[in-house]
Structures are given as structure tokens and as C-alpha cells.
Length: 492
Image (cartoon, rainbow, N blue to C red; front, top):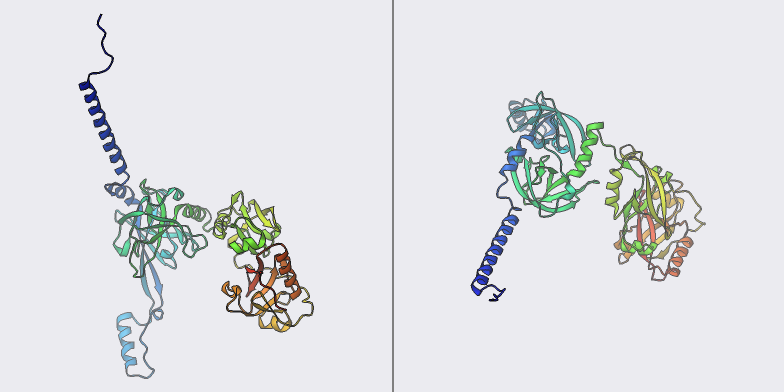
């Protein structure tokens, strides 16, 4: 019996190796093709899909003739009659005139709700919506929110309108493809493509959460949508950063997750209803954290607690808010957004750091719109101990508060504290913004009404091994905390 080898002949082995290499090469080609699909060959399908829901907005406003600039002519000059006649001939004298402005928007429901920027329609007497089909409709304002620069409009129509939906802006990543559409420079229904350049940008608003993009955005794009590749609106084009007034590739779109909350409230109430905690706050810095013994540099430092929800819930100036309604607080901006997005009247748990320990407070939120403009509560009165002389300490020249200083600084009769009368220009206090005329009301999170109070607080900070002491400084009633080093000896 003949025994055959279990191994393949050399020729067959070579053929299998060649086949394997061919398969590997094809797999690599397919993988590269799949990766290339992440970069679209064209945006045309996306444009075709969303264009019917994108609109041009034209607004008109009646302004007084005298509101514009006019030549300055000396009274009695022979040119006076000439310019009056020229103006009357070309502008109908002092009659009001109508001005127009252009912007963009997009339809979010088949029954005719339209989103745009508040600054596009602000003060407008008439708002005309032009659709991709060429049809024009007059719109009415349902509600506006200047804080996020969002406005909700409504047009009346018999037939259902094409519309687009919002996407989750929190899932947008830097580098993702996006497309902006709108009415740049009055050109109408123009598309531009780019990527998400940055996230969570803040410009000047309290509730800012902008997506930065290099998709071309110009004047007239305001209020238009920023789409992701799934045809969802993830931002409302609002602003550009440009020294020339034209696009240089730095545009900002308000994140859709901010816009949807505003739109829902405008649709339901015609106005926004944001939660209100009732505190004044500042960020926690390294030296502030060291001065109060806070291990982690985060949270929002409470500088003042006027009459309101926080005061009713037991919060105090000097508390550091570490968490709000179960969510950690990193800084003041994050806290403001968390509170504003919380339902008015909701009872929330707020974790604060106070005197070296954490404490839980239960606070029922008020409504910010009703509370804006509230006056902070005054500090309780106290005797200054009869001190009248100035002393130099921590780079500051400080005097106890007396009636003369109270009058000069226009302070309330029950105001207490120590007045800064001079600041050493080379001191850290000066670098941190302390100036003559400031009123120091607390040191080491305890009230101070005399120089001896301040010296005692400094001594206590040194004994506790602190490098800094936290001062509560008020200027024109506005409070803020400043941490100053205590390693230098005080001057007598």
C-alpha cells in the first residue's frame, strides 16, 4: 500500500499564497473606498432635500426722516435753502421712510412655524417669507429671545409646508462635515460647506453655546440653518468673526440643543421661562480654592445672595456650588446654563462647600425673567469699633467705614466694612483689580467691620497654613471675591 504525503505540492502552495495576497489587496481597496465615503463626493442630494424648507426673510421698518445723517449747514448760510430743496425734491421732506433688511430662516413644521435670528426681525413692521418655490407669505412674530438671538415666526398656509427637523448638536464632533444655507448678501438660497471647527464657543451672551464652522457665512445668512449630513439642523447661523465684514472662515451657529428649548417655550408661552437660583457668582481660581481649603478647582463661588430662592433655601455668600440637581458644576457658565434649562418651580438639590465641609440644600427655583433687575439685599449694620485711622495691609491702605466715607462712596446707611483708600501699584491686590473706593465686607468668609477683625482673620489663615485669604470686595454694590497672599507681615 502506498502512503501519500498530507502536504500540498509546492506549486499548489504558491497558488494559494497568490490567491490570499489578491484577497488581501481587494480587502484593502474596499476598506479605503469605505473610508472615502466619509468625505462626500457631492452635497447635491442634501441640498435638494432641504432647500424647500429654507427661506429668505425680508423685513421692512418705517423710520423718521430725521433719523439718518444730514449735512451740517450753518444757520443763515446761502446753502441752507439749497440743501432743504434738494432734500425735499429727493426725499419728500421730513416724511417717514421705509428701510428694508435681509436674513434667512427655516421651516420647522408643516403648519408654518419658522425659526430665525431675533436681530433679523427686531423692530420690523413687516416680515415677508420667500420660499424656494418663489412663493411669498407674510409672517407674524410668535416670540423672541434676545439672550440667544432666536425668534419664532408663523405663516398661514392652506397646504402643508416642507420642513426640516433639529438634530442633537451635542453629538456633533470637531471635523464633522456641515452645510450652511441661507440668503448671503441677498443672493438667496445659497449653500456653503465646511466642517465643525470648534464646539461650545461663547461670544457675549449668558446662554451662549455656539458651534464654530468654516462653512462660508456672510451678511444675510443670519437665521439660516446649519445642517449635518443627515439633513438635520444642528445650529442656527448667527455671527461671524471678521475684520472686513466678509467671511474669513470663522462663523458661529447657535447649537440646536439650545435653540429647541427656546423654540418650545416660545411656541407654548410666546416668551421664555428660565429657572432662577438667585445668586451672584464667580469662577473658582487656584488661589481662591487654596484660601478656602477646596481640594478641586471647580464650581461656582457665591458672592452675594439677594432675596430670592437661594436665600430661602439657606445659601450664603462664600458657598461654592459643586453640584446642581445631581449634575457636577465645573464653572459659572455651566451653572447658569443648567439653572436656566431647569423648569421654573422645580425643587432641586444643590451641593455646596462651606467652611471645609459639603452641605446639601433644597431650593425651589424662581423665574429669571421676573427676577431680572432685583436689587441685592443690603449687608446688616454693625459698629466699627470707633476706629478712624488708616492702616496698610496686604498692599492696601484701609480705613474703617465712617459717615464721611459712607457719603463719598454713596453707600447705604446700614452698609458695613473696611474702605480701600489706596492700593500699592506693585501689589498683587492691584493686579487682581482691587482699587481705591472698594469696600471689604468679609475676610476668610467672616464679616469684618474693624481693622482688628481683618488682622484676626489674617492671623487665623496663617495658623491654618493658608497661603491666601479670601476677601469679599464690593464696588458700586457689585460683589466679588479676591484671594490675596498672607505670607508677608502686616504693617502696624
